[in-house]
Image (cartoon, rainbow, N blue to C red; front, top):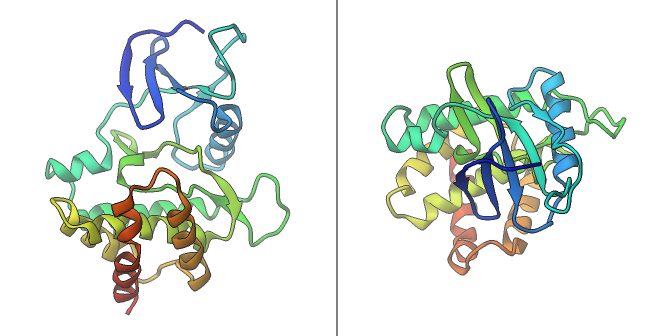
Length: 227
């Protein structure tokens, strides 16, 4: 499809206007499956989970690829991270919202597995992947979604926040406060979920050397929050 004005750019993708009320997210390389990502989003939305609507990208042309093009509803509002940086939301409120979003997501049945213990997992739920709209928070970036044990989803969110907290800097203390609120009772984090999350983060090729080096301290922070 024809793309409109470039309105955003991220680590792996660019976002363009795609008509009134819609945007096109185009991955710079084919590293995932945008069509499959859109199907997951529609599945969780059908069960009441707050995500943007998606629609087909249109006919395949030499300029398009359904594996890297995703057309979705254009959302109005800041990310949760920006709201925290601007003082519109406290870190504790952000962490509590992340916890509620995880609990809500894990009520959604799996879309492939018939195992009642298996649920849809986002696996990258952090403050920059939540848009605060007038109708409430909406969760974006489902490129890493899988089905599995909810404990892993809690582990991934906890490790992401703990890495930032352990790294210090201007977001260190706020991330630590978010982590504490995320893991306040009741938390769905499990020992197995934490171990697998740490393993995955260490193996993630997008992690910097400093981010990987922060993992032991991040684990210690998480265990401190858990008591």
